[in-house]
Length: 191
Image (cartoon, rainbow, N blue to C red; front, side):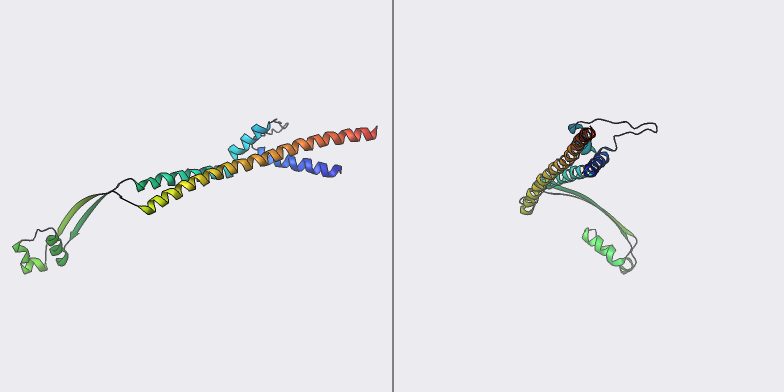
C-alpha cells in the first residue's frame, strides 16, 4: 500500500517536473525549489506549450485566409511588359504587320528574306473588377468558418493544457497529503 502511494507520489512529481522543468534551476551545491500556485503553473505551461503555439499559428493562418478572401470585392490590377528581339523573317514581318508599321519597302524580296534585327517593346496595364463571383462568396464564407474553427481549436488546446497541469498539480498535492497521512499512520503504529 505504501509502495503504491510512493509510486503515485513519484509519478506526479515526474509529471510536474517535466511540465515545469524549464523553470527550476539546479545548482551544483543544492537544488532550488520554487513554489507555484495553480494559476502560475497553468500560465507557465500555456506559454511554453508547443500545441498551444501551433494552434495559435493555425489561427493566424486562418485569419490570413479570411483577409485574402476579401479579394472577391477588390479589383485586380496587373502590369506586364514584353520585349521582343528577332531576325527571323516570318516573325519580323508578322510583328511589323501587327503594329501596322508595314511600308511598301518591306515587300522587297531581299528585305523579306534577310531582314535586319527587329525589336519591339510593349507595356500593358489591366484593371479587372469582379461583378459577381459566387465561388468567391462561398470561399469567403468557408474562410470565415475556418477562422472560427481555428479559434475554437486554440481555446480547446489551452483548456486541455490547463486540465493536464491541474491534474498533475493536484495529484502532487494529493500525493503530499497522502505522504503526510502515511507518516502519521506510521508514527501512530510505532507508538
